[in-house]
Length: 210
Ligand SMILES: [Zn+2]
Image (cartoon, rainbow, N blue to C red; front, side):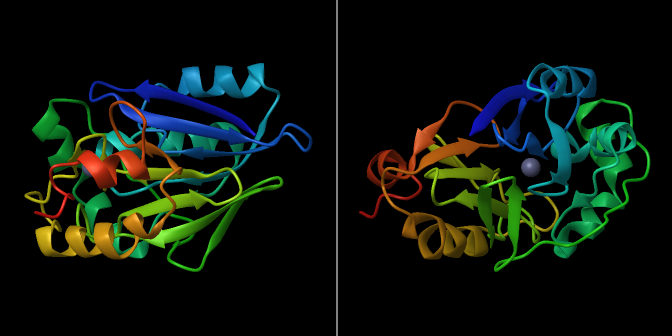
């Protein structure tokens, strides 16, 4: 599996490109910004984008999606519970002091039970509300990799004080869904360094049980 992970935009959202070495099909996850760089990496690996997946409707994760769709023709997928977030992208832009990206159109909703494929590499979608109502994670069981969005970070968890956030729900998502994954699962958070489920189970102060 080709897996490029790189920070984009002023908030350093971790964007992922997942590609199949044989079919050259790819999925781009959270193209928040810096689409020229995303396109350069796709060209470098000779990949064709089949789907653009957004882990949740915050501007730093979705801001570049329309530009990437225009350049590649690939559809944009986001859980429908976060469509409301897209209606307030101008407000979100003002919070962090960046230009509003304009309207974002979603082609398809994604939720638990759905599968996203980059060639032979398949991810199960896990609906993990809490940071936002429509937050999702992508779990690649064969590759032992979780793209966690802003649900789980190395040593921390996503904030729940923004509209649609819920501490109760993020705790349910983490203990009920995310921590059910094997310890040796690589976690790619929405921001910051990579980690593993085992490390977070053992050391994350928000998850360790007294
Ligand atoms: Zn977020």
